[in-house]
Image (cartoon, rainbow, N blue to C red; front, side, top):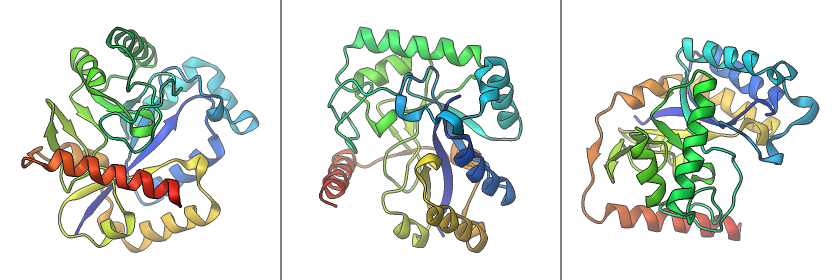
Length: 252
């Protein structure tokens, strides 16, 4: 039976607190501890929820204290880009989208960007070696800089188990959710954006947690699985799969 973990993207002080809290309540109810992607210095206007944000987070100390409470109860932290602003039209190594905060950006500029992000995370009391790229897009320069700053794991890629690539451990995300739910062996991650979810999607997740609880695991279990060395040609196959999924999404 396929094990499934949860990751929540786009965590920042101005996020839609109502939607986040609604999904977090489901995770707490079923005692599922996810990975969350913390944006170090959000400048994406689409992630400013206005009146739906948590005004207590206007105080950086209050926001940092909340993140610490999540960490203390077993939620795993990752660095979700830096500003969450797309500055290029590149898909990079995992071309799920044709826009990026990192892919196609000069090495020195990526260094400055990621360094700034780490400084912001330190102020929030967060230390992590997991990177979550906005839009799933990054390139080899991104990995060079991340390696220099001590990152060892990337939450992205397709596969049945964590795998080694370019001196990183890639923590796989779901290719097709319905297929993953019926899959045999292995582990994957469902990517969740609470602010974009409809009432129906919230209900579907609650139904999954209620009826398939044994499949859903804490994200820490993903981190405890040794990374596999993939067969030759698998990276190309992955690239073709994600490109096909991107094209299909455009058509639909």
